[in-house]
Amino acid sequence: MPRISGRKEATDRLRALSGKEKVELVGKALFAGGEMIKAEAARLITDGAVSGKFHVPSKPGEPPNEDTGLLRSRIEVHQVAPLRVQVSSNAPYAVELERGTSKMAERPYMKPAANNKRKEVVALVEKAVNIAVKRK
Image (cartoon, rainbow, N blue to C red; front, side, top):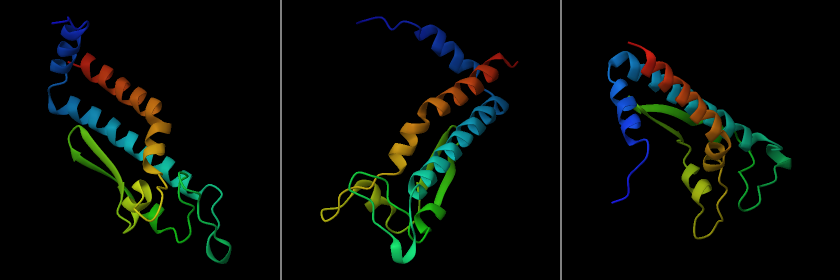
C-alpha cells in the first residue's frame, strides 16, 4: 500500500480543530465563501441581461440571462452543518436551467460561479483553519 505523505500532519491539524470556537471560526469562513459564490452566480445571471420586451434568452451552455429577477433573488446560502454550506436557488426552474432538460440545453450559473470563486474560497477557508489550529 502506498504511503500518503503529509498524512500525520493533516491528521494532527484536523485534531487541533476540535472545540466549538474553532469549528465556528471555520464555519463562518465557509459561509462567507458561500456568499461569494452567491454573489458570483448573481453576477453571471445579470451580466448583459435585458428584462422585459427586449429580453434575449441566453445561448445553450451560457448562464441564463435575467428577465424577471426571480432566479437571482432566490439564491440562498445555508449552513446545513457546522462545517458544511450549501448555495442554491429555490426558484421553480433553477435546477432545470443549471442541468438542462430533454427539451432544453443547460444554462449553468451555479457551477461556473463556484468554479470562478474556488481559489478565493479555498484561500479564505485555509486562512481560517490556520488561525483555528494556532488558537489554544
